[in-house]
Length: 429
Ligand code: HAM
Image 1: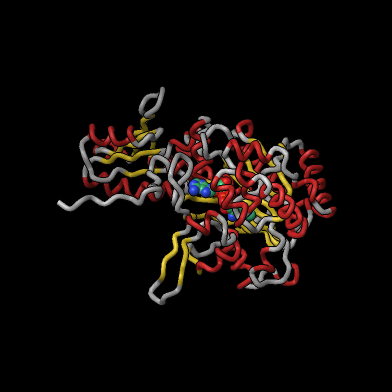
Image 2: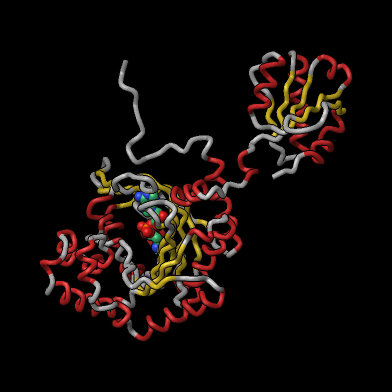
């Protein structure tokens, strides 16, 4: 026998018992984004490699070692998208929909690919819901993004388990000045840094700030602080954001070491983190990227956005047992029919009911079977009620209506009255 095939490491099937929770989560986010006036955009999963190199940055972990890059049959270098912002910027530029200062509030959902070391909450194919706003440069929109996520955590019942971390990276000029000061400070202490930080000091010095190495962290204790190098405009922007979060009552922690792993950020950066998931605790992250569109060949266009990891948030709902009861039941009513004639009548009756109650989750037994086996299937489906069509019911043009959960006797309901009866018994989602 040939060796059985397996999924690629870090790329998961989402099985039928898991999809209801995914759909609940995705549906909740989609509704919220609709209500705040965001529109969905769908980009391809594969883009030219160059796009990611130019936007995310050549010396980031993602571009240096995590991208799924391959040559296609034309010899073009293509990459499975590791994130959504780059492709979204490419798309708005290509279609000219941010031209002339047009505001765009966009969101997307889908798989992303990074060749990271898989562990709980970290996968090689993972899923994000992300959003990007173009042509709004004030702190009000940064605040809106955060307020919206705060509302989402509330709706999902996980607000108490997440914490907002906030920082400002300033403009590219002020960041440049800070980078110089940091490099000077760290270079003088080069031998005390861990190997990875020594390398980063040359390639991407700000990333030294989020080192996990205790010795390097000790060196960083007295390092120059980014906040001291912020230009007036970035400072005012940051104050504006904090004032708005204060006004709505959203708690946050200032984290001067929050620099993010992608190069395109300026001014605001933020992360929602939790201690409920172990090492992979960032469930949603983003920030402002006012220089990116220009860097990608467009006119100067402010941008800000974030993305949340669906796997991590679903895991959180499971860990905190915040799974709404109604999503576990996928069938309201299960129709059992015995004999050929009853089966035909049952099919027609089911369609009539579906016409009248389009939201009713009605499953018709398939594969015939004895009384016993059909009831077993009805029960296993999780349905609240079984409808029974046998010889007696056919003769009287009724169905047997049998509650499957809890109290109540079986009763007979006339075919014509069935839809109305079901409407009173089943709360339709
Ligand atoms: P990111 O921080 O790289 O940002 O990813 C955002 C979120 O995606 C993370 O906070 C995490 O929840 C999830 N995530 C990232 N990598 C993995 C992984 N390997 N496995 C599971 N989940 C993961 C971005 O992608 C930016 N594009 C966000 C953004 C949008 N900034 C501005 N606009």
